[in-house]
Figure 1 (tube, one colour):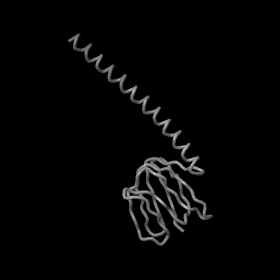
Figure 2 (cartoon, helix red, strand yellow; figure 1 turned 180 degrees about the vertical axis):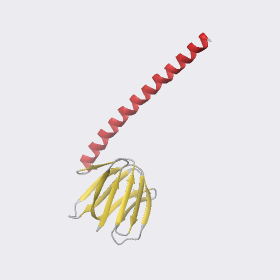
Figure 3 (cartoon, rainbow, N blue to C red; figure 1 turned 60 degrees about the vertical axis):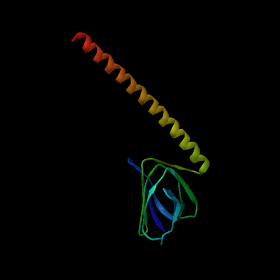
Figure 4 (tube, one colour; figure 1 turned 90 degrees about the vertical axis):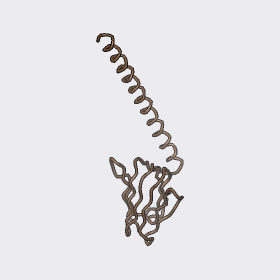
Length: 130
């Protein structure tokens, strides 16, 4: 068995035993088994899957990151990731997360625009008074 640990910047997403791990690197998809050689790969945003101890396939949507296999351990460090009950559920979860991020990004852009406009207005006021 492989000891799989998937880490996000703020928490551990997965830490459990796996019979195999499938991920996607810059050069395409690959699978790891317990006796494979040690391995390092940059990951692209994709679906990472693994077979748990009972043989059930588990799916994760992951952002870009790094995968390291050393001995019987596989460590994955990604910027963001979500676990879904199945591919359909994972798709819905990812869509909801993207919508929330889009809203947050839009609000951030609006705040920056307001700050820039305020800066320009105050700069012009200084020029008029000076």
